[in-house]
Amino acid sequence: MKSHNIVSLIRKKRDGERLSSDEIRYLIRQYSRDKMPDYQMSAFLMAAYLNGLDDHESASLTREMLHSGTVLDLSEVPGIKVDKHSTGGVGDKTSLILAPIVAACGVPVPMISGRGLGHSGGTLDKLESIPGFNVNLDLKRYVEVLKKHKLVLIGQTEEIAPADKRMYSLRDVTATVESIPLIAGSIMSKKLAEGIDALVLDVKFGSGAFMKTREDALKLAQRLVSIGEAFGKRTIAYLTSMDQPLGNRIGNWLEVYESIECLNGGGPEDLLEVTHLLAGTMIHLGGKAGSVQEGIACSKRAVRDGSAMQKLRDITTEQDGSTEYFDRPDDYPVALHHFDVTAEADGYIMEMDSYAIGMAGVELGAGRKSMEDAIDPVAGIILEKKIGDQVQRGETIARCFTNKERETDSVRQMLQDAVTVGSSRPDVPALITDTVTRDGVTPWS
Ligand code: URA
Image (cartoon, rainbow, N blue to C red; front, side, top):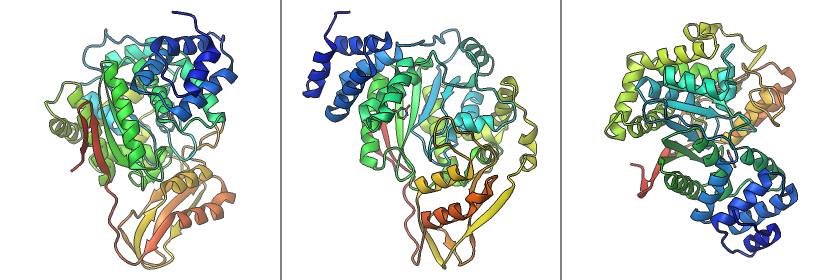
């Protein structure tokens, strides 16, 4: 690698010029070796935030962040390994449902997930609401479990993309998180390190999503797909709405409960639609279905014949979790305090501010404001109504569960403000709007 002057490279990006792969490699390697201080990396990140990075620069940045740590080699695991990543939202528990479905259909799913922060939940916190479930497997065991069950569910380890971890912490305190190329590099470096062959992305937009508009979500999806394909991984993204929470239950055990319902053949329609689409696409990319539609049929079959639910039992037992509540989910310990939020007028649910509902969940104890906060697995919200539903004055819109009694009044008000009731039936926002592949964007129909 050629030597460069770090200040000159920051200046170049500051002035809107394009950096070569070699220049980006130099910056990230110097930073990883502690030869570039945080203040210079912060300046580079701000320059990248303000002037952007093109597809080529993005791929180079991703490559260097990826190779700052271990890149898993899963060649000893037979089959095309496929994972899914969601950009996060409220009530989004699709990973818990689709991972066992896809594995039951014969496609290996090596899933490394994150924790929730702010309004947005995380798969690891949900899994940990299953008593004993161990998400902290080392990488050797990760490969063994994947080989045995075609499924493994773990958390980020220190070895995976360490440069991203440090850069993300800097972005958090330098107002440079909301940059499409930096987000794309951060997500893809971690996903590519898992050793996958293909990836399905659920890029969310709306009040409860990272990307507030469909346009921004589309730009992010295109960038993610372009990076995935540049690394030779088949990558398909869907744009889905977070203008209301997905499914009816928000909170860690509550979301496992709803996932079990789905795996047992029930569950809310919106959640099932997104889950089967993502699962069907994974099954198709994993070579077990000739098309996404065939993949969706496989996905539904794995629920009907019980093989997906059995897969969740097997992986839970393998990862030291107890399946005792899978058969009797209502016997799970309950929160000390329950209260309902009711409609103040007759009419229809017009809007649901997913962000505010997610933050109400945090106040109840279901999420964290900073990474050090503890999570309460039983806290959360059950939505009895969604957009378009008719309500009568006094009827329950949401049921809340918490161990923090003093939060009840403020959360009731937050939820009352988050839900708008109007007099005419609204159009329900489209749930899935676009498909993004290497061939372009197709509106969903
Ligand atoms: N999620 C990530 O992993 N990285 C980002 O930069 C944003 C969301």
